[in-house]
Amino acid sequence: MSRDSALAPFAAVFAEPVGSPIRELFPYLSRPGMISLAGGYPSPSLFDAEGLAQAAQQAMAQGPGALQYGATEGLSELREALAQQARERGMQATAADILVTTGSQQAFDLLVRVLVEPGDTVLVEVPAYPATLQALRLAQARILPIPMDEQGLQTEALADLLAALPAGQRPKLLYTVPNFSNPRGTLLAQERREALVQLARQHGFWVVEDDPYGELRFDESSGIHQAMPGTVRAAGERLAEPGSNPVIYLSSLSKTVAPALRVGWMLADAPLLRRCTVAKQTADLCTSPLTQSVAAFYLASGRYPATVQRARQEYQRRMQALVQGLDAAPDSGIRCSRPAGGMFVWAELDRRIDPQKLFDAAVARGVIYVPGKAFYPADPDLHTLRMSFAAPEVPQIAQAVERLCQAAAQSR
Image (tube, rainbow, N blue to C red; front, top):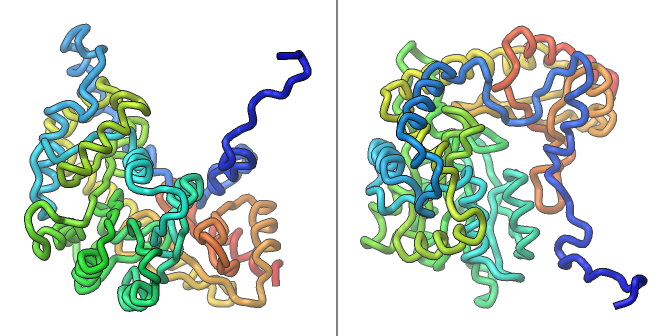
């Protein structure tokens, strides 16, 4: 081979790859005084650093074995703790039904590798989590959008689409965030959960239920927080024969304990779980056994419920500051709905506002959000945006609202 010979080309999907539209906003965050309503980062002030430090000490006290490789499926004690959480949420689960992953994003990536081939049809609620769209594009899937409203994914529209699809385009899977969705913050109505399961059984596709926010439910009526919403997986257990549940459940400790743990998990029936385990062996062999051990000790400490309760209460305060601040400025042209939980507010812009001018003016004034175009596989509604109220404190949110309203006035 001569010195002038070109190296082998990149794979086609990585020839001109498009990165995460949210992470591409990171350079703006280094600007002095910038208030971020962009990334869905949990608040550092809510991390139970003391409890996690104690759990880390317990993990290291196990000796050198704590630093060894572990089983691909995950540590047995953590899997049992996660199965117990699933049972408390109304799902049937044992440790054998759980695969621990490096964040729930890896769990979805494994599912795409196991289930989706180039050209396969995948259904996605829209607006959708951008990393999901990114993974599906790299898998060369054919992405079909399913619209949402205030009650989540529109199952009637889904039924109409499925009836119209040719047999050769039957979907492999559908992706949804039913509890306080990212980005809309909606809660899928119970009757739609059951309808979704029935459609999946009728048409033979998997439902990927991503549930990182399900425990972050607010209560607007009293000081006693409501019970957590159920899961589509639990509805699948009621409506399907044993061993034939079409719903795959994904979740994570990132939004309730700490993202740095990178502990997520998948709950699925054995045939699919086994194949995802094989796929994970070629990715990272196993999720860090040390961080798994820290997570297991933390969950066993009994501190987790209080940590989640503090997060619910504080995120509700921050959500109210954002929504009420925008409601108090009706002339801003930014209309948003009040989520019942989670970390996000979805907003629509007055059509007289130029979306790009608004973004530029907002950044110039020291506030950043995610433009709505990031959440669509195609034909985006440019007059939309997502704001996260989780990371900034209430006084920062009030200042962000003021800056955003000033930018909106400048952008008409």
